[in-house]
Length: 285
Ligand code: ATR
Image 1 (cartoon, rainbow, N blue to C red):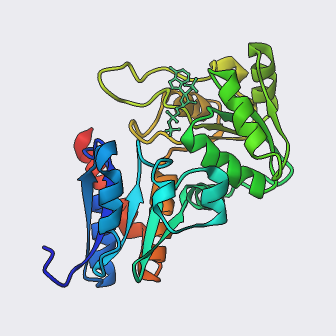
Image 2 (image 1 turned 30 degrees about the vertical axis):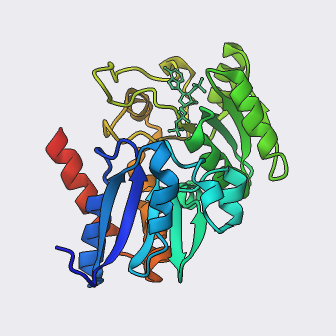
């Protein structure tokens, strides 16, 4: 348990209940012999500014930031990395002597997850489903990696806005008809679901897919940022067609690993983080 001298890392969230980050990071701190403790803080929006002030205390290494604070926290930090500025969201804050740096490690986490899966997107057609916060990090990572992107979202204007925000990094075609979406899926070397469709939450039937099975390509890879359940219907149908698949757990672990490195200046053992996260997920199922 933490003592007076234990360094602290907080998760700023609302609600804070279901996050895997505390177990993942506390396992990694223990494994690395670092006297630090990660704790989720449930922070309603009106208390965000005060919570950020507390991150400047000397014993605090930094924080993670998640829903609903990833964008609204931006004006409260002192500096932003280029990725955080471009993506328009912070998921990690580092306290350097009372100065708060805002980072976004989601894009690096996604990129490393793809690399681990052996997927190289340079010059490849990639279809991204969704245009929310997670999509922005995924699109940033994919454009930096040299992919040619198509983007489809239930609300097309959000896809247009997202594409417009990233024109400096590369071309993104926004798909506004089902026919265009189906053509793009057929031709994609990689399909990424960044929407919450297929996620298990609040009694909603998770056995839905954001894409009809018959438009999945004959070869290639499908990644889903959802990790509850471990295999969404999209991934199950892709696997049945012998496509490569990856759920959202590697992105979660690798964004966490990058945040850990920024706080402690040491890379964690990601195997320890995977095992800690999987133990929680298995206990839930
Ligand atoms: P996150 O930060 O996790 O990306 P978000 O910003 O709320 O969360 O984005 C959720 C994404 O899932 C959006 O692209 C959303 O589509 P809209 O922009 O049209 O809202 C998408 N999404 C959520 N529920 C959906 C559903 N039932 N069908 C299709 N898309 C859905």
